[in-house]
View 1 (cartoon, rainbow, N blue to C red):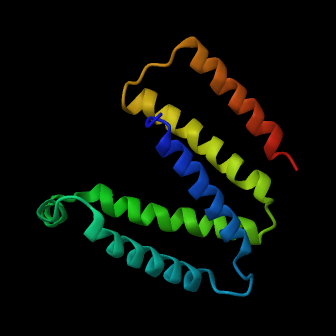
View 2 (view 1 turned 180 degrees about the vertical axis):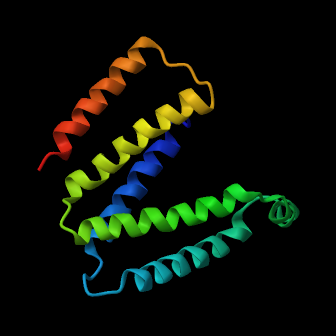
Length: 141
């Protein structure tokens, strides 16, 4: 059961995220919205620190960060801005996330197979081809 808790949490949080993104006032400058979004996230993360295990580990972890943490931060800005702009361009909430996430998943399959030498079974390939077909059908206007 605990195996699925992170996936359920991701699904719930992502659903709330998309409903909120779609509800941002159209006249608000996208970067102002992102600044307030990240300020809110920063406050939430700082408030969670006392409840996180291992204070000394927390401080030591700051010294152990590598380039990937900073790239994740930059990537998140790209994702947030892209979704906000997609909704403002008229993308439907029912399709924008699906199309973006299936496209991302297919790109990650290529990266996994070519860059990380991951193996795909025949059933995985069939499932991915179905995703690709679904992407083509869903992305058409």
